[in-house]
Amino acid sequence: MPDALPDFRNLGTQLRVLLAVNLAAMLAALAVSERFADFARIFTQFSALLQPALLVTLVLLLLLDRQLHRLSYRSGVLAVMATCLTATLAVVAMLGERDGLGGERSVRAALYALAGSAALLEYFHLRNRALSPALAEARLQALQARIRPHFLFNSLNAVLSLIRSQPRVAERALEDLADLFRVVMADNNQLSPLGRELELSRNYLAIEQLRLGERLQVEWHTDKAPTNAKIPPLVIQPLLENAVYHGIEPSEHPGIVSVNAYRSRDEVHIDIRNPYTANSGSHHEGNKMAMNNIRERLALFFDAEASLTTTIGSNYYQVHIMLPYRE
Image (cartoon, rainbow, N blue to C red):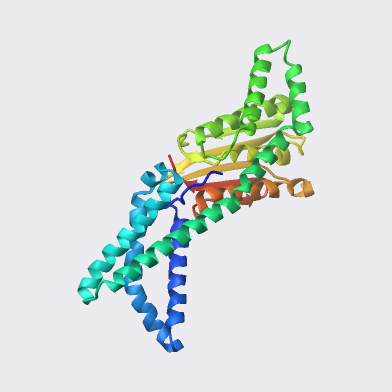
C-alpha cells in the first residue's frame, strides 16, 4: 500500500491522537514531579494549554482532511505539522497574554507541537505498513478461491453444457468468469465503489446459479444502496462465496442467499444471510479465515469506525458489515 496520511475524519484516528498526547503529558508530569502528590497539579497546568491546543488542531485537521489528502505524502506531512504548529502557537498566544506569560512558553510549545506531530505521523505510517500485508493476503486468498478446482471445474462444465442450447447464456457466463479473474489479478489496494462490488457479486452468483440451479435462490435488497460509497475491494464476493459453500452446497433443498445494502445517516450497512444447519459440523469452520482477513482490511481502511459481526440464528447465518460513508 502506498504511503498515505491517516484519515483525520476517522473516530479511531482522533481517539488514538487524544490518548497518545495525554499519555505523553502524564509521563512528562510524572518526570518533573518531585513528589507523587505534585503530579495532579502539574498535569493540570500542562492540560490548561495542551487540551485547547489539541482540540483546535484536531478540528482544523478534520476540516482540512480532503485538501491534505490531495497532496503528496511528503507535502501532506509538512502541511499537517504546520497546521499543528499554527494551532498550538495561536492557543498559547491567546492564553499566554491572559496569563501574562512571556515568549519562552511559545518556543517550548512549538517544539512540543513539532515533535509530537512528527511522532504521531510516524506511528500512523508504521501502523499502515504493518497492516498492509492483509491486502496481499486477501488477494492471494481470493485468487486461490477462484482457481479452486471445485469452483472452476464445475463452472466450466456448466458453461460447456449451455454452449449449443443457450450460447448467449454461456457467453455471458464466460464474461462473468473473466471479470472475476480480472478483478482478482488487479492491484486491490484502493477503495472501490459499492456499485462495482455489487456488480461483481452479481456476476459471481450468476455463475453459481448455473451449476446449482434452483438450489440457489438469491434475494437482492440493494435499491437503497449508495453505489458511490467507497469500500475495500473484494469484501462482499468472498462472503457470498462462503454463503454458497457453507449454506447452500451442504443441503439438498433449495436455499436463499440474501444481500441487503443501504445507507443510514453517515454509515453504510451490508447484510449477507444464508441458510444454516447446526449439525453441519466443521463445514462452517472455513469461515474464520475469510472473516479475520476482512476485519483486518476494514481496520486498515477505516480503523474503529468499521466493524464486521456475525449472527447465528436457528436456521440462518448472517454477516453484517458497517463502515463509514465515504464518497
